[in-house]
Length: 355
Picture 1 (cartoon, rainbow, N blue to C red):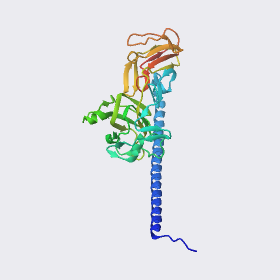
Picture 2 (cartoon, helix red, strand yellow):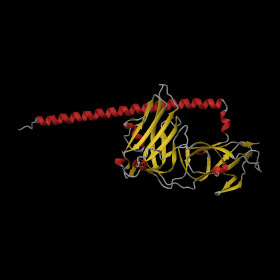
Picture 3 (tube, rainbow, N blue to C red):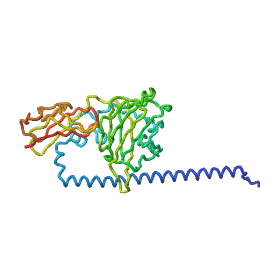
Picture 4 (cartoon, helix red, strand yellow):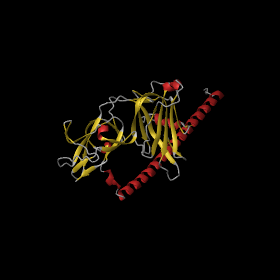
């Protein structure tokens, strides 16, 4: 009976296949270790940062600082009785008319696919894992965009490759989801458009008017729609960990093209523990532009003693300077109708006098 003998060429092919499989397994193991190390680093820094926040909150309570927060309405935690709006993270913003398009991810029957046509760098250093911040969260196998830095000031850049355009890059909303919400501030944010790139114009097409402190999970609305060429973001990191490093990472950074309802608003029910005498005209708004000292009139805010079936009842006249307008009847709560034109965190009246 004849036996099939393996030729030397077949043996070499088998050896090559075995080497390739071993190499692939080694690469997979290295990737798994890298991802595990990254995940452990994120978890360790989150735990340490949350512990620091708890100590700061305890200190505020011990010093009685919570009293000054009685006039502050954090919109996402308020009693919203009616409105046309969307909430994302710590912000309330105009309502999307439909699901926005993500310029770096397109939706298919099988899920989201990533448009790999951009370079992401921090302080001019390009790392493959930084690009993970642009990928949709549902895409499996992506890296973790997280690092620890020696300096607390960094610059993040997202730059399109104009030679590899994969559809439009038009956007008007920036969605940010940090791993450590509140641990950094955005000093400046500059947008450069493709049109300016083609015209060799080095000036930004749009710049953020002020710094944003304690950046959390939020959406930032731009003043217009832009075809993205580059985003430059200067960031100050406020948290130093036990290793003497400044951790920073974004779970995602989305660029969305959205259509929004221009008549968006919220109606909030605001309660006090005593009868309300007067409410100040002056107030402070914390929004995507920073801290804004403004007035009810400038913000088109309306106040009512009651609100039912979409109608405000008995408008409240605010007080300003020496002009006091006491509320004519006993109430411990009132309603605020606030038009939403931008991403907003909170509204704080300068004074709500009680009796």
